[in-house]
Each structure stands twice: as structure tokens, then as C-alpha cells.
Length: 260
Image 1 (cartoon, rainbow, N blue to C red):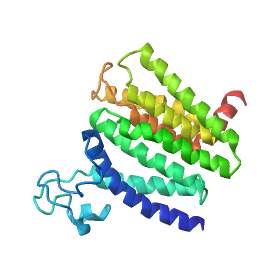
Image 2 (image 1 turned 90 degrees about the horizontal axis):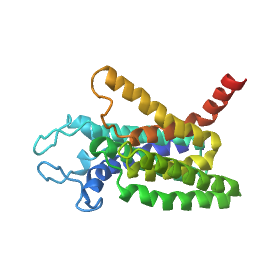
Image 3 (image 1 turned 180 degrees about the vertical axis):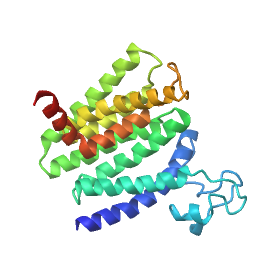
Image 4 (image 1 turned 45 degrees about the vertical axis):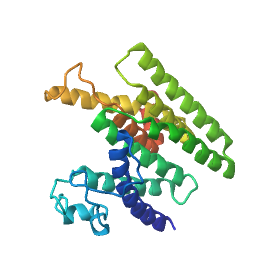
């Protein structure tokens, strides 16, 4: 059963990843993700079924549109493969448990937000705000069905704590972060808080650690300066994913290393 769950999640992840490419392109531009059907942004030709197979079609087309031969960014198969891999990882992490669908949604919206933030330095409300409702509803249903009321209480506390922490950062140092980061922080706190305090703390800390490491590396190679604005959403998302997989283990290792 566990193996079937992983296989099903992987295939589903490929399909969701293909849809996320549409979301990443259209949502920041205020376009519908349903209509019109997938089409080439260069020649406007509709993309046929054979050219819309996740990952495979990009390689079959050698990264170019069949009609106008415009280049198709490598980001497309990367997003599809990354979504499939993350879905598979979450399936291994949670197994066939009622929490899995909630975290698959979090994985999907996290990937979309991270890529959009990298591209446009934006975290659209159209993705962050509905995630509060989806997270509270899905995790609330799990808490009710599995008799886990404290998990839901902890999730709400985590949501409020992360939102407030980022809110203070934005107010204290305007320009260092954006309000999109504040809204995303609440979503991350909700999902990590449901799992445990360890995951919540590790997820919050990991974002700043990863951001610091990458920032120092970019300055070292001359690609960024001290005042260069770097999108923080991707670090928040990667930090959250890290916490979901190994947050509990990292927290216990750190406590054992520091206090014995």
C-alpha cells in the first residue's frame, strides 16, 4: 500500500507540475488558469496532447515549440520533475495518511510561489490567501477525524506566531522584506505547527540560514552586493520543506549537541 501511494503521488505530481507551469505564468498576469487552453506564448498555437506530456514532451521537442520553434524554458520540465519528486517524498514521509493531501497541496503552492518570487519578486495574494482557508479546512478535518485537537491548536499558534514575527520584521525594517513574505509566513507556520514545535522552529530558522548562505555566496562571486534585494520566498519554502522532512531530527540533534 505504501509503495502504491508513492507511485500514485509521483504520477500525480507530474500532472500537477504541468499545471503549475500554467499557474506560474498566468496568475501573476491576472489571467485565468483554465481558459484559454495551453498555448505557445510566442505564436499562440494551441499545445496538442502529444506535446503536453510532463517532462517527456520538452525533451522530445528539444526545448522548442513545434510550430514557431521558439525556445521553451528549461524551467518547465524542472518544475514538473521537482513537483513529482516532492510529491513522492511527501508520500514516503506521510504514507497513505489523511494528512497527505493537505501537504501535497502545500508542496504545490510552495513550488509555484517560490518560482514566481524568483521570476517577478512577487508572492501573489491569489495563491497565498486561499492557502489559509485550504490549510485550516484540510488540517482541521484531519484533526477532527484523527482526534488530534492539539495539533490544530498548535497549527493556529504557529500560523499566528510566524505571521507576527515577519510582520515585526517588515515594520522594523521597511524594504528588507515584503508583505507577501508576511502572508506566506502565516501559511508556513500553519502547516509546520500542525506537525510539531520542532518542525516549526527548524522551518523558521532554516529560511534565514539558507538565505544567509546564498547571499554570502552571491557576494563572494560578485553577483550581489550588500544592498541587493534577493527574493526571500524561495528560502522560506525550502526551509519549510526541510523542516517537514527532517525538522524533528535536526532539532533533537542540535539540542543533543549543545546541551547534551
